[in-house]
Length: 256
Image (cartoon, rainbow, N blue to C red; front, side):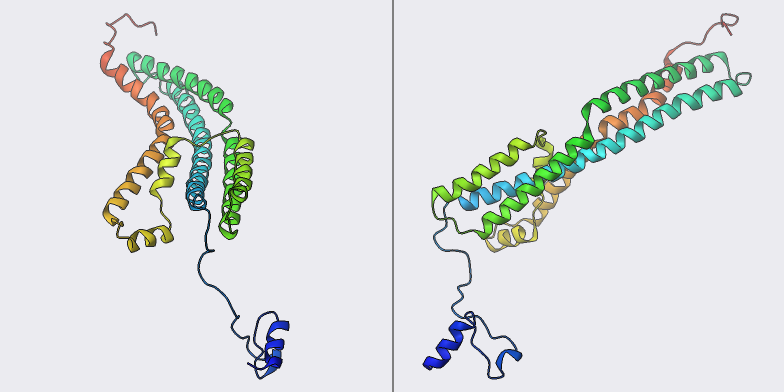
């Protein structure tokens, strides 16, 4: 390359000017080295992988708490509806229903009213909505920090300590923490890039990964909804059990 061409390439920001001038298509950049930065700190990749799991776990925890809050509201409404419908049923059909059945229904209505009170008090104390927002914001902060670490060449311990200090600050600002079920789902959920890496290293087992993800999701969903599902089923189950176990009152013994 002539001295004039070298000067033009240097002053145009590292791009060789095309014969057609700047109006033509851009040329390829000069002296670009592809691939990761050389001589990275050995712990950089370890922290990137760890923060990826933490980010996913926090997002999973945020979603789980949001679903718990929604399920709690629906459950509170359904249980309250149980008690109201049973009371109305007893009033409207008191002459068509036997005394034993009325006693069972009245007991179920009382159980429903107590469950409504208990659910309302406990769900209010757990503060799912606020905790979910904090976990979501924390996950976003960790995600941003992880991207900054990935884009920054880290060669010394001092450079790495800067990112570790920011990570500690993010964790300290977030009061709630994710649970084991959130972290287990994070470990079982792999991105396409992680799957491709496992395939290239010969460690990919699609059947085992699908089974692992399936059971992690089952555990996650069970942890989210088991309590509310139990409350939904409690009043009718109590009624059925009483109907089968409590003996019928002898004739003339009813107080109705």
